[in-house]
Image (cartoon, rainbow, N blue to C red):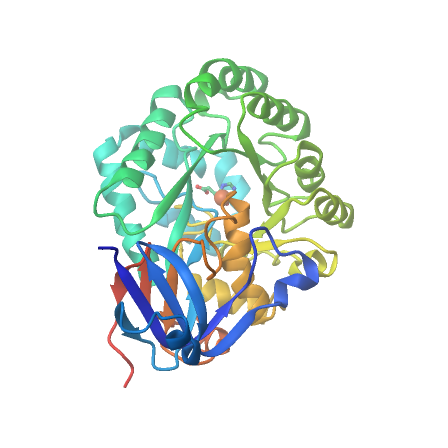
Length: 419
Ligand code: NIG
Ligand code: FE
């Protein structure tokens, strides 16, 4: 017997399609009142209006979940996180509050290097256990797919340990989320290679890449002034591309360096952060179809200006939103605050925000054909909100509106109802 479920009496709100929505298309949600979603063995088989259930011969054949008019959305895709790491860095946050800058702390040997030291000391089992704690919080906020990066090892053994931890999380029997792994060996130049960036690039290309290329979907790099500048970045990205990996970049995060232009030149799937992107970079990304993954929590936590979301959307780009959860620049995985910042400060409409957190997030990790929208053939990853109107998402400021999270057709989180 197949496992059949009907989510009945819902307000279904979803983007449609199997690829990223660009520019104006981002606001085109399908909103259907008195709707149902029919799920069989974890896959969405049909959607429509309640009155059509009988005609389709579907009523009475499945378990019912009565949504009582509330909104059903696709599960959120958090397409940029650093979920696996050892230690914490609360002192750095305090230094920053007192006026220190993210890059000056990094240049003194703190920042990423401090988490590298801690991660090298942490066992794989502990990395898995710590990551699961964060995953539980994500599931409560409606995340059904998460991308997670290595990049706190910066030596072969620890990079492999991080990727193995991600693989274990992905294979857990009782898991509640899908994971996509990214190799971020080019996150910083580790202290052993201080002043020898070129040699560290050689090490990544010759010693690490061949051993990790089949253990991660994506290659990512921190393209930044005094970290990996354009020439080193191009060389690393080309090597990763030659090894068959798909590309992502941390681009134009702290200063404008031409990271967006490089992402377009290299045919990256996404360029992320982009707080200081140039107009030229936006135009090139739109032309090349690179997803702009914007991370407002990081801008908020670093007290930096937000990425120019409107320029990206009005310039015809596909924008995704993600949390950037990490122990340094952004120790937060808050989807509700991401939504609030995107609507209030980045001037995105709630329809654009929903597309950015679902279908475009899926596109940013190469999965737009199987997740990111509620339509037949896609995985049954969906959310029931507490309310009957999508405008509650920004209006209930920075608060969680997710009542139920359904992953592969299974209820993996459920909260008490409001009434
Ligand atoms: O996305 N900027 C580089 N990487 C992370 C921060 C990592 C850290 O501070 O530990 C980011 O902001
Ligand atoms: Fe990041």
